[in-house]
Length: 220
Image (cartoon, rainbow, N blue to C red; front, side, top):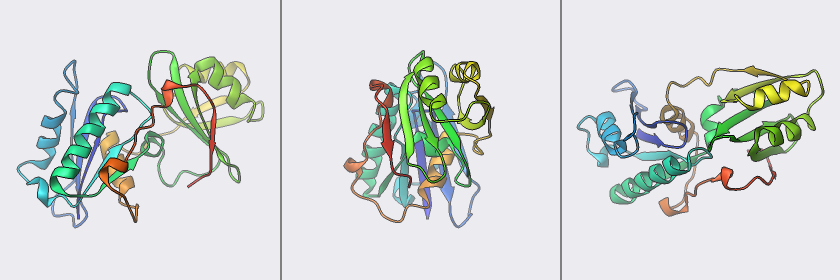
């Protein structure tokens, strides 16, 4: 199967095309600069490289949290393409795009949205996932309450801003590699493991930065 992935939540708009049969290597493209989001369709066209959309068997899109505007545009592109080609659309969270599938143990994944605001997903073995969006200080307080003082916290994504605040509370943040050059590539690879899906319109955005309330959800 040929799979197309796109993302606009984690930095510049990016697109990736992967062929499970390896008839061609993974293709990636991004649209940077002030008109990056408007050039998103060009990035998609670049990775298709003349391949008709009908040749794509599945589409995947990042569902956030992250850039509010980028997320809305990427979802609009993805849903339009999926409906036009009558193909399934898989939503992949920004947390999963940044955290490698083989990550284990206690770890946190950070996503930045508006200036001064970040979102985090904390995973602790045997416990429910803890997710929260808020100011750096608020996140540091919440995470410090769940971790032992003096502990090291492996982290994925952009922990800048939160890391110094955690250091003041005795938690050392250890940055880890995400394993993918572009978010769209990580998203399309993650989507390969999804066994079932619904209609394209069922894929919804996680506008995590719109509220600062903590959320607790069961692990996948």
